[in-house]
Length: 457
Image 1 (cartoon, rainbow, N blue to C red):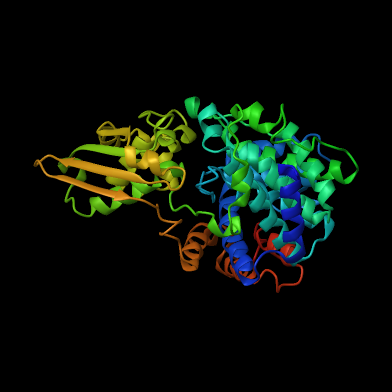
Image 2: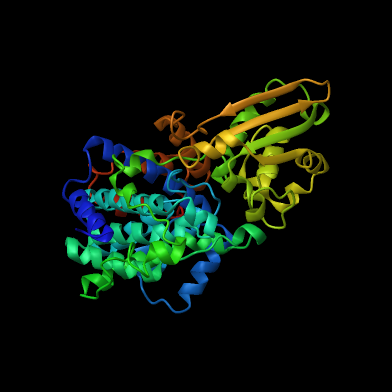
């Protein structure tokens, strides 16, 4: 009977052969690529991204792969790390609810860095990304939510396997080599959730770890290094080492192409309470003056969304982005949730502090039962005149029965990238992404468009 890693490897080989179900895979690739580029471009200017560049530049002599937003070049592994950190730097990147992680920020940077180095075709890039999402999501679904409850961040753990799969496609590796690459990835995978307690930068670099290590695992296996065949289900494998044997290999039988079920964010904060934000914004339309009229707010969420996300004070932007009460306060006071709202100086506003202190979070039985099938929320607002407003949101905007249209992703891209690139370059990049397979040297052309504008352009 084939092991879990061998089954995953066989699926990667099948995807590499045809890239998934035709036009659907192309459209899903373009949607996720557009969102990745949006997040990586705006994240390239963050202090954490610049710090990772400086850390690697001091010892990295490579010039094979491009950094998004700067045009600087590094080795594939270093470029993947920096670009992945940029993509996840504002917690605005795509994800997958049933997997409990962020595939795009790990898979795209590894793929782009190695594809640029190897001169891969647009079709190979698409197949690599589709395979990377498939494996990352399958591995995470086998472990989630047990992994989150144990303290592991699926983005870093499962993302290592996803990045390994993507790079294996670019190397045109055979199934047995890919299985060994997964065996090696089990010794690289890691990343803990302790950032929830303090709000440090470690969360931002988790996709970078996965992207860099995926490149290493595929390269090592391509050179003949071996890994354990039962890296997941073995006595000392991932399931036993990470989640006390609670892994579910049945998740391998989940039908469909994972990249088609990725979610997209409208709010730059933890996905766990986006449904609550949607509900609050809906109810806010019925309130004349939130500061005067709102007496109390109750957010009903599932357990994983409450634990580590119920704090009302934050010393860092990440800590603020991980807080359901802070996001709720921003939604009610500002009528929206944006990046500037999470800045420490913004959080000091007296009216915002007052609203945040009116918010309470608790585990809602229905939400707990539905998770991880969906990220639902029950929102209740008590008004000062005695009325109560409430709503239940099953799927936040951007996934499930409430997906974002292609036009919504265009709007997100234009709003964030046009100020950085200029209208002409932004539109050229957007059009290229939607026609990636048909564009000669698509990746090189895209990376060129994402570099800083020259004088007079």
